[in-house]
Image (cartoon, rainbow, N blue to C red; front, side, top):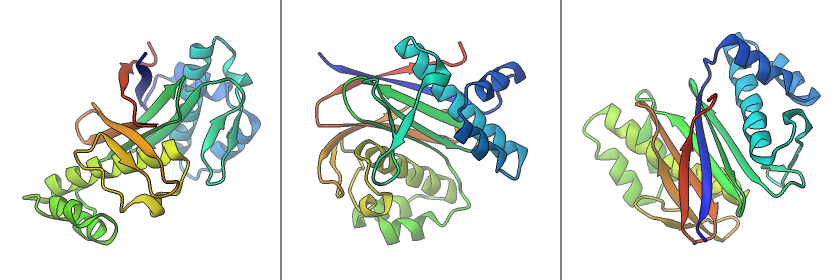
Length: 221
């Protein structure tokens, strides 16, 4: 049976009632972290991201959002405690991505495409030579930024699925590859692009080389 990965792409700008619902389900630690943000926008992003994750996962499991607990792995990867479902969370700009998998460790990443970044310099420093050349060959800053973000989200998704460190894995080749072997820890992951709104790139990965099916879902419904 082919594994299924649920992926939700959510806007930060949810209606006020939804934002209040997200805040209500947070635990004490999440509330403290939200309160520490200096801007209302950053606070809103955190509240909606973590609240939506709780609400989505609780719906998948048939439990209360506030009852969910995550523990941190060696490199800070959150792991849902004791309920047999793997989760991943990412946010960038005005969008949030949530992913769930019942069978295997999952990682999701979403990135805003930023033409202001020195994408050729960054990819030259951290990416394999062929990926640097692919980014640098873009005809303008927008194309280079899109290519960089495309590769970055694939790398980040693999890192999140593996529970490793991003800097140890940036040199791992991901372009046009369905199966990627992470550098730390050294294990295979299947990675796939996820359709995202214009100006964003998104990818999801599962530990192991076996195929999976991605199901894009809407929240709030």
